[in-house]
Image 1: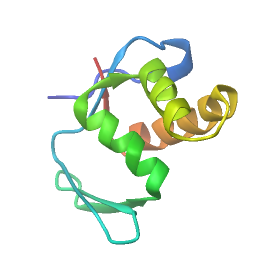
Image 2: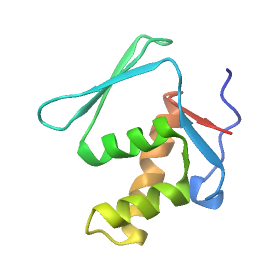
Image 3: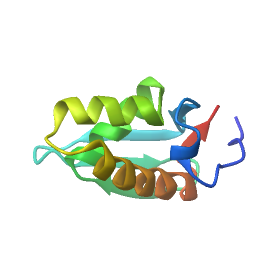
Image 4: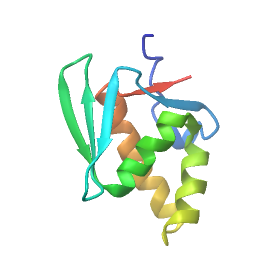
Amino acid sequence: MAPASRPRSFSAIPHRHLRAALGALCTVGATGATAILDSTNARFYTLNDVGGRVWSLLCEGTTFAGIIDQLAREYEVSAQVLSVDVENLLQQLADAELLHVE
């Protein structure tokens, strides 16, 4: 499946469905870091534990708003701070072709 055109801002489309790329394989190490292998582009990425949590939500299929709501419940961080950080991570994942907007 080809990636849909990427929005300029994920926060501007808080209820659009987001999903991790199907060709990406991942595992979580003992330190909590998530390792992602993009089998399509033969690239390797690592995410910290919070980034890994975002990735797991993307694997389930979610929305920007859903990610923010879930992380706000799990971590002691304001939704405003989460919004900025998650936006940046999603842009990086989209740039790496690891994220699909449906």
